[in-house]
Length: 576
Image (cartoon, rainbow, N blue to C red):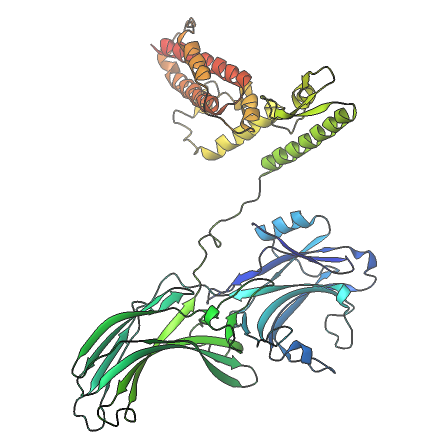
């Protein structure tokens, strides 16, 4: 989750947290609204805390709301009481993240939105209009009140925190076949018709895309097609107390294309309907917008089959009209001109964001939280100690320690001093993987065990059943903790000297004398298991050596590689 939305009431007692303000309508279902309210109940008294989600339609200017008359109708709303607690939803990852962000006394809530509610749409105000625009909006509100539904109780603004959210629809993943329309028209005193055919490759286009329209004309008459005009109309159905329909032209473009008598024409013409060309048109339907955000023409409303009569609010659709302006012949050509037109449906929508809901956030594990908290605590200690030294007259340098990356200090004798290496590294912190080998390698063991599939009990890895020596645990390696500590810094390319030292150490290692081993055939399964365990340790050490940024760590890893090589040689001699 990249952003958390937060709103605090004026009295400071209520803080509303939301992880997202765009709620996606998938036609068959709608995403739930998950949030958290943090309470400071010192001034609540006997009042209760409620959270409400409302879908409302404003059909008049806000400045006209006087003497108790409001031009706003709640299409749907739900409210729940969270203090004293009467609502405990099933916690989600969103809840978990928001509750960690809010801290103590945070109460989660969830709203499920029905799929028969309209999307967020506003009507474009005129140049001189002020206040909130007419349209459909969704609002999450938390407030203090004595009772849930009491029309006589006045709720103060200082006891309220609210956030506007949007209900959106994105384009479906599958695009339908392109529409096609044709028309044959006969004229008076003309025995032959004119044939017009228009088609598109697909039925859905994104906002801002160029829309290609393939036009074919077969003019068998004696008249001339003077030009071709294409218009795009937005049809807005406002369903509230009654059904009203408004049609506004959002594009009107003429093409200087002529078709002579008994001639043919075939060409693809492109159009792009944009809001920037319709800024002055009052009442145009636009996508709902949040504060200080730009918007665009309203997206086409997609309804589930059979839902037409159940939806209140604003429904938006588009259609394209292709006009042939046909002129007459002779002296009365201007008076006998006519219009030949066909219509094509158009779906305008936004593409679904590529990262929308594809990334599944996972909370950190208990081991990772210990690492995060330990690093934060360590940095706080370093900052405090460095502050004390600066007060004593030490000077902060622009260089960092090559071992741990901490900023270096310089005393009055011009000697450099690293607070981390010379003071903190001597401490023992049982939860800090940077300071304690057991804590660091326990995390390594946890990751290794979770990534390896279980082996059958009777296989080569089933050493417990055969009575063999168990696999060495990662915390038995002293170099791994230092390897993890070195990995906290940006990892430079592997040092050639360190790799050469590892290779030379392995090559120069003397072979261990194998102990007498009677009944070698009986020990073969155990020897194979031990060899595989040592190879696993050798691969791990080689990988750590390539990413190590510390000389001391590289030396320890080389020593481990050397020991593994000797052990492998001894096991192979014993098996022979």
